[in-house]
Length: 131
Image (cartoon, rainbow, N blue to C red; front, side):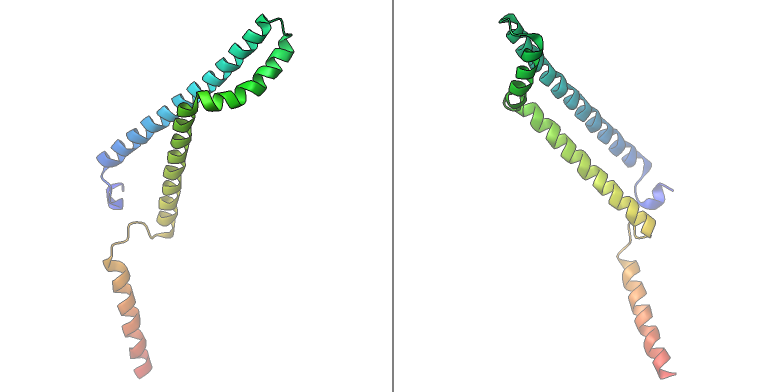
């Protein structure tokens, strides 16, 4: 059935493994970005606690300071995560469109089929009018 759709098994397997690697890379980037932001929060809170600021106040200040600071410090990592998410969204959208086309029965139409259908229907109409 896979070969009837026009894509051999080895190509679809290669594409799936490539998408899986990209997905794993995205998961790693998201995890790394999350850990980096929490690490920055912990460092800022730790520095404030060293200056004898109460822990809850230090955490509150660290959260407020860490949010904009992480956007600047980790901008490269944030861009990688955003690009990976955009790519994943694009791939999911393409898969969804392919599936919808398959469900409609219009997946991978050859250029000959639509042209062959139209002349037949046009030729049959004048024949009916002459009878």
